[in-house]
Length: 490
Ligand code: ADE
Image (cartoon, rainbow, N blue to C red; front, side, top):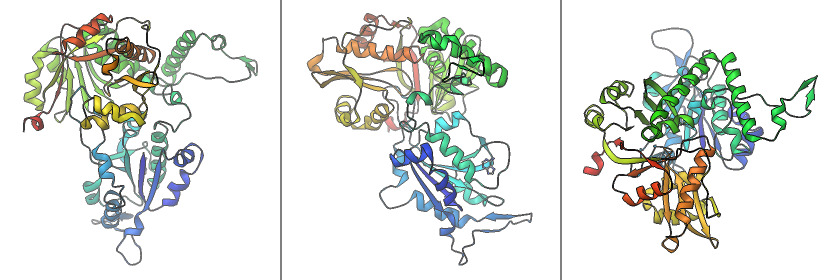
C-alpha cells in the first residue's frame, strides 16, 4: 500500500510514520509513505502558496496551481511507478464467475471537517486501494476549483476543526495501515476488535490472575475455546449496550434480520453470510426481506420473496449502482429498466446448513503460494483472471491441495464470499481431492462464523450434483448477478 501525501509540512507526516508499527511496516516494504511538499511546486518566486479569498473574509486560501502541479507530479510521474496503472487493476468487485471487473481512478482524499466522517468501515474500504493520495489543507482551505478537478473523496476525522490536514492524514494512515496484511503481527488482532460486526471489543486480562483483589473471569482460565468465545461475545454485547447504545441498536437490528432471513437459508445465503461476517452493511429490512451494500461499496444485495418487496427495497439502491445481486426473477426487467443492469449470471445457490465441520479425506491442503500463481491462472480463466486470483491469494482466501509435494488442485473464496474457484489437476480427478478441497472451504467458512454457500451457474449440472452429493442443499429459486453488459455485446 502506497500513501502519497500532498502537504506543506512533509516532515510532520514522515515523523508521524517513523515510529513503532508503521516504521516496521515501512522497513518491511509493506507500506510506502511519500510526503510531497506542495511548496516545491509553486511558480511564485518567493515560494508563496496562498492568497486572499475573492469576496473578502478572514484568512488566506491555498491556491490551485501548486496543489494541482504537486498532484500531477504524483499521478503522472515517469519513474515506472505511475499510480494510474496500479489503480486500473484494482479489483474489489464482489465477483461471481465472469462478473466484469471495475476500473477505478486513483483515490485522492481531501482532509476536511466538511467531509464524510472517517470510521472503521471507511478504513476497511480504503485499505483495499493500492495507492492513496491524501491532500492536506491549511489556512482557510484550498481553492475549490482544484478540489473539483482532483479530489475523489472528502473525509473528516470528526466534528471539530484542526489547524491543518496533517494530523487527520496521520490518523487515517495509521487506521488503514494496520488493516494491510502483514502490518500487524497476527492477522487475528485486526479481525476480532472494536467495531467488528457493530460491537465494541470484549474486555481483556493479562497476568497476574488477581490484581488489587480483582480476579480474572474464571471462564478465561478454562481453556475451553467455545465457552470463552461465548463469554466474550456476551461481554462485548453488554459493554456496547451500555457505552454505545447507538451501535447496539444497529447490531440488534442486524441480528433480527439474520434470524428472519434464516427462515429461507437456501435462498438467502449470500446475504446471511455477508451480514454474519460483517461483509455487508444493512440498508433496510422489511419483514423477511432485506437490502444491504457489500463493504466493497459496489454490490447491492437484495433478498425478497415477491416483486413488490423487491421493488420497495430497490428504493435503497442508488441510480448509479453497478452490481445488484438478488433472488427474485420478476425483478430483472425492472433492474434493467431502472439501472441498465442485465443478468450476467444466473446461479443456483447451495448451502451447508449444519454447524459441524465436514470430514476431509485429503490432509495436505495449505494456503496457495503466490509463487505458483501461473498454475492457477493457466487453469482458471487465463490471463484475464490473474489480478483477481492474485488478490484472492494475497488475502489468504485461496488454497492448494498437494500430492507428493506437487499442487494437485486448488479452491478459494470469491471476493463476494461464495465458495468455489475449484480445480483438480486431471491426474488427480476421481480421487478424494476435489471433495476434500470443497469440504476444506466449508470448514474455513464455518470457522469464521459464516454460512457456507456456493453459487453454481444453472447449466453446470456436474457441479450441482457434486454439491448435493457432499450434503449441501441447493435452493429451488435461482439467484441473479446483474451488471452492465454493454461491453460484451459490442
Ligand atoms: N482539517 C481540519 N480539521 C479537520 C478534521 N476534523 N478532519 C479532517 N481534516 C481536517
